[in-house]
Length: 79
Image 1 (spheres, rainbow, N blue to C red):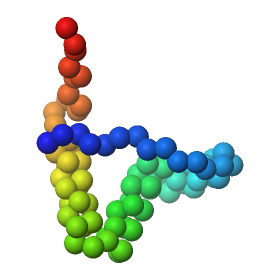
Image 2 (cartoon, rainbow, N blue to C red; image 1 turned 90 degrees about the horizontal axis):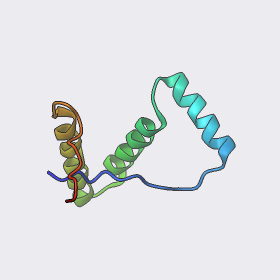
Image 3 (cartoon, helix red, strand yellow; image 1 turned 90 degrees about the vertical axis):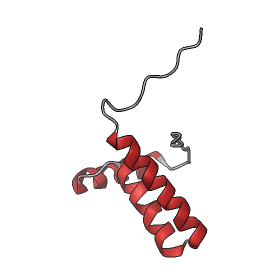
């Protein structure tokens, strides 16, 4: 299974990002965990069958990655 997680970029004012970090810390989650939970919830609530299948595929990828011993595999080196 290929690793398809990629960093995403979006614009948010710095004070809002700081306030969001403060709230997430109080809730005991990272911003990434909270954002991912929100995305999942939105797909579950508003997605169609195709969207939910993609969500299941993503969850399987994450579960497989978490199950690896030693974490992320080493990057291939070019000769």
